[in-house]
Amino acid sequence: ERLDHDVAPSREKVFAILENFESGKTDILVGTQMTAKGHDFKNLTLSAIIGADDYLSFPDFRASERTFSIITQAAGRTGRGSKGGEVIVSGLSGHYAVQTALAHDYKSFYDKEILCRKATGYPPFTRLIGILFDSNSEDYLQNAMTAIMYKLPELPAGVSPLGPVPALIYKLRNRYRWKLLLKGKNSKHLHEAALEVEKVLEMLDRRISVSIDVDPVGFY
Image (cartoon, rainbow, N blue to C red; front, side, top):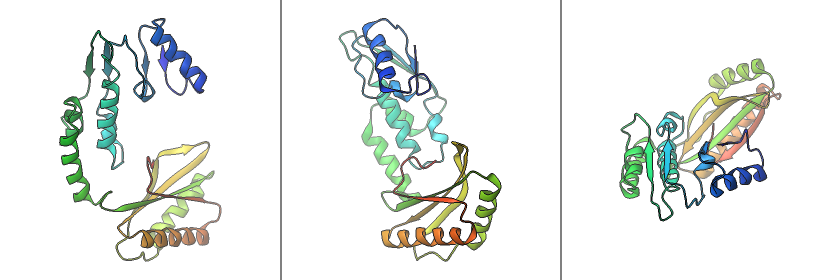
């Protein structure tokens, strides 16, 4: 059977598929991250994690952390019963997130990851505010984002903008999306900067919707 949001949009459908697998009615379960989190299958003796390093290409400073977490969680579903188990991990990367996950070595992962965060100025050494712009008109949004690039207000000291750029998920529910990330250490200055950006956009084009996400997680 297959398990993902397309074939299992409701909790009831998810549970039905998982029950079939746990009871032995289903021999092989193929799915997304939904198959990896929090399940306890006594008879699961083989797992294969395909494209284990794909997440590393995401434009997300947590990409390494997510990669480590996904591999660890998926591998942890296997061999929980008396039969033991085997995990096959497929991926081309020698990245430390993959290597430390294979070794179940959280401490080594943390030691490497925290140095990268510090060098690039990402949390926990700074804070972030994400600003998402969306519109049902691609032209209106494109014009507004081009204008913001040239009319971005002077931001408070210590606040730096990243973007605006098209969102990774560029179109969602028939609306086009761009994003801007503000980075800094002072929460008050970050909030002031976000409000200034919102004011500028209101003057440029009120047909664009704006949403502000403080300390964003999964800002795509």
